[in-house]
Length: 52
Image 1 (tube, one colour):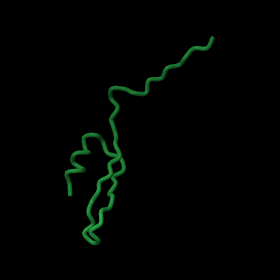
Image 2 (image 1 turned 135 degrees about the vertical axis):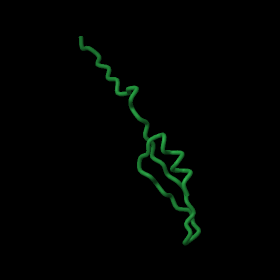
Image 3 (image 1 turned 180 degrees about the vertical axis):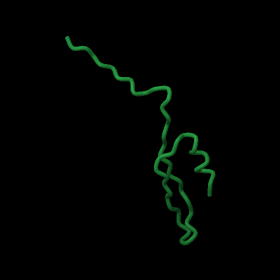
């Protein structure tokens, strides 16, 4: 009988990452454009959305 292998990939030291997309109004045309930041750590997300 084969043994079942259980892998635990989640550890307590892992950081959470998120892709952030912000909608910004263009000064040139007045239309909204999407500004995307690739991958941010969870602590940096509020600072990214707070900046103009």
